[in-house]
Image (tube, rainbow, N blue to C red):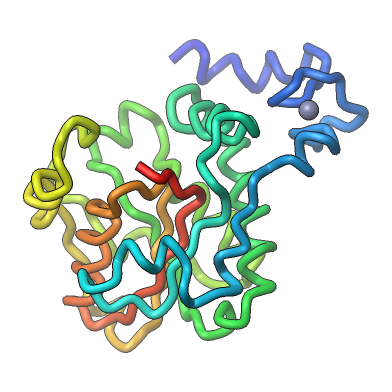
Length: 229
Ligand SMILES: [Zn+2]
């Protein structure tokens, strides 16, 4: 709680440094130095319909396009940035990375075909504990750059799933398939870009996507990062 309240103040009074290498930055608006910015591992997947993220969902659900903006790599520092916004209250980092992902997507051919963005929701109690949903922060930033509406209220998480990391792929799917509920009034006939932070097996993203499909939407997927699992 204290960290959440104090972090904007800390950022204000301490020198502003690159979030990855620690080098001091000239502008408080920058998050990374030019070297680290250049080293972020962009995938370029949004330029190719056939890509490893699209491959995750093939045969599991009909997805129009799927992509991830970055490789979830430790060496580049991207993993550290994601940890900062998932577990250390750094909403500003989620917004910044979302903006970068938005610029990438906007350059892809299929971006214009998207009607709206929907973030993968957290269970309400978890969102309250954390204070925010990181996927919603990403979606807001991506939507702003793409000039597309974001509809966080279109999809709800109605069950808490606990930790996913130690379960098998089938176990994870069993664990998430009844977790989401989508609102057809907001979704029927629309092409939804589903936004998530990290995709590994795709089980959670798939369950969220299935709920959107059942509500009459067509679905594309954009995750911030792809972890090879
Ligand atoms: Zn740096």
